[in-house]
Amino acid sequence: RKEVEQDPGPFNVPEGATVAFNCTYSNSASQSFFWYRQDCRKEPKLLMSVYSSGNEDGRFTAQLNRASQYISLLIRDSKLSDSATYLCVVNRGGSQGNLIFGKGTKLSVKP
Amino acid sequence: DAGVIQSPRHEVTEMGQEVTLRCKPISGHNSLFWYRQTMMRGLELLIYFNNNVPIDDSGMPEDRFSAKMPNASFSTLKIQPSEPRDSAVYFCASSPLISADTQYFGPGTRLTVL
Image (cartoon, rainbow over all chains, first blue to last red; front, side, top):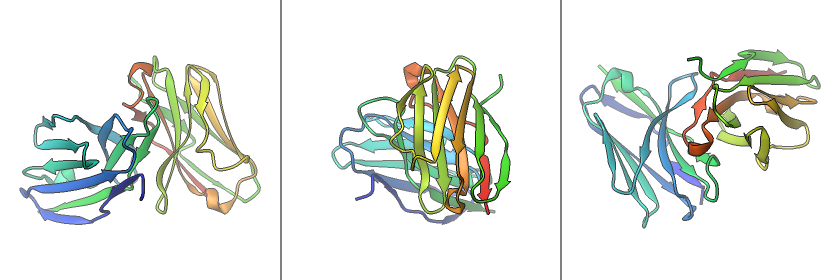
C-alpha cells in the first residue's frame, strides 16, 4: 500500500459546484495532516491543516478519520481560481518536518 | 518579507556535469528541506536540516547527491556527476523549528540534464 494515496483526477466541475477529494495514508503513527495546493508550474502552498475534530476555512472543509486512516477535503461553491492540484500531506511520524506528499488530485473548474 | 529564495530558477546541463542548487530560507526559520518533484514519483523529501544540522538524509537517492548548510541563511544541493534521470524540479522549503510541518516552499529549480 502506498504511504499516501490520492485519486489523481482530473476532476472537471462547473463553477459553483461542490467537490470532494479523498486521501488514505498507511502509517498509523502519523500525527499531523495537511492539504497543500499547487498551481501549474508553481510551488506547493499550505492550504490548511487537518484536525480530528474537522476544520473549516471559508469554502474549504477538511476532515480526518484516524480509525480508517482517511482524510478528506470539501470545496463548496467552487471558483475558477480553485483550479489547481491538491496534495494530501501526512507526517511520517516520529519527528516534525518529515512529510510524505501524495501525488495530488487535479481540479479544473470550468465557467 | 521575502520568501524562500532559490537559484538558479532553470538549469540545463549535460550528463556528467556538476550541478549546484542554492537556497536561502526565510529569515528566522530553523528548519530547511530539499525536495525533488517528478511526474512519476511526485514530491519526495531528499534531506532536511534543523539548526544547520542534517537530521535525515535517507531520501537522498545516491552518493552523487550531497547537501550542505554552512549557516542559517544558506544551503546547497549538489549533484556530481549529473545524469538524465536527475531531471526534475527541486524545491527548497523552510519552517520554524517549533512547527516544522508547516513548510514554506521556494519557487523551485527546474533541472534538465541532457
